[in-house]
Length: 252
Ligand code: NAP
Image (cartoon, protein in one colour):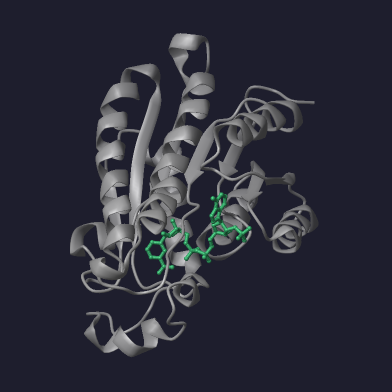
């Protein structure tokens, strides 16, 4: 039976990496979890299985976060299977091969914006329409996964990606002020140098080990170290925190 006191969370891009770690931690804190993915069904189902083995409730949902109809359908399924959403983590994101601007095509730039910022925009819109106390909802909490690249700009590597994360920062600031009176908090984390598959997508699987001597803490981070910050921002312990950013980049 679904009651309004249940905690229901959507984590986009939760089949792997930071999203998967966040899904497992959220389940261990009592959230019912929608594990979103776009391609890797096997990995998403494996995360659901781990949640269920721990006594939690989860389901995997394939949806491209940059496609409005797929996002709307995913939220309809969450309503049906888990009940009213109380928390959203806009985590899904993509990174393409390292290149200077001259090597970044029009198509690649649009793909990066679609996956990284349009997805965050579409999922937030659906979540807010359900959470807002103005619409009879119970409020809620959103965490956007930005990147330390929004501050460094990632010159010579991925300025398209960094610009999309800069847009997430502006979106977080604006949205947090817009929906604060509606009982919704919006915050962001800015990870950097976390051991996940994304660096392989960027064309250099060993990137963190190459640059770790330049990180003040002299090491890369683990997905669980990002998940901990996300779960804190979502929780009641952060009840007066909105429009805030937590950098998780070993001091860089
Ligand atoms: P990852 O290991 O490459 O995983 C990416 C996840 O996003 C996968 O679950 C993937 O699903 C999903 N995804 C990609 N495009 C999607 C789409 N259009 N719709 C729905 N799901 C989609 O990445 P990660 O390193 O964990 O990164 C997670 C977030 O952290 C990203 O926003 C990334 O920019 C940010 N971040 C990461 C780092 C780092 O060092 N790792 C640093 C800064 C910021 P499939 O498995 O189905 O492909």
